[in-house]
Image: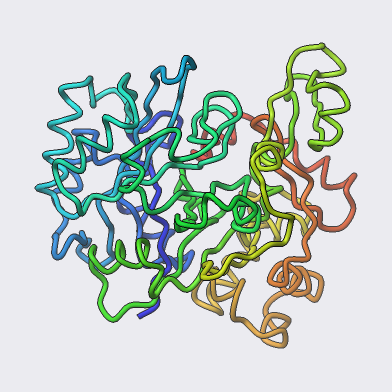
Length: 421
């Protein structure tokens, strides 16, 4: 059984998400995307937890009435001081059962509130988190989320550490994986030998159910039976972990250094020449993921460690169509072509990974078919994201693309297509 899993999601109860981000819509668009396992997101929030408890649970997997599977999952934010420095780190928590979820929430309630946001914030340390959760169950999986983003991650340039060991000390033995985040990919992480012991997982951290958000990064497993234990075992041992699906790291919001307010984007080399100062306003640049990886790397670019899980780079189909038709990802023009492809091939992953050129051209025009195939081969150029701005796939004329990037804020909010990590 092949499993396409996105294990970092959010619900309508998280900040900056659509009120329509409910189980029904999540399942609908997950099936269209080609996902067949999702994290529940936000099991710490009492109202979302009550909705999740209506689903049938078996062997750590929750299922809707139509049989779509979810795993218990939440994200929490820790803000604390360690080593004389303020730390802001997010963690993904995977839990083996509703009973264990209740115990996790009971512990967290002793530390603060859970009802104000699907991703709650606490003031205790990463070490205390791991110690407490391992005291509840060794089957809980704790994964540093979007490990390289500048503001809220274990390696972030503004509040992170230089290693997992520095952060978690003797509790490092309980950490089996890190989430690469959109602004980095495995090839970048492989440059750091200290990370060889950790499995690299990829998830969307989606605040939306739209298919250009959900599943844009995912994990591909092969297993005889879908249950919590088998998924966690694949993460911990890499057995049955076939590959990850990644966006080009340039697509991420923090790949390059930059200053969004001034529209300044720089490679690490350029930033260093400017002493990491914005040339317009003379304030400090936000140091991006590529720069941060360069700081910690002890291997050359292109190094692949033994036993590493392979990966594929893919830009979401809606973005490819939008680039070809010179429109936005959520325009009627884009949706029309997207729906025609889904009707023919079943899922977005089938379009992106499996559809043959001749078949593609029977549904899409030649230019779109060629763009889909170039995407499959990792040949789509992406203008790097920086300081909270997504990178932009370059398909055709860049000037025309610039014009079509102007998205009305009101339309964005109507669609619930909110930015996330």
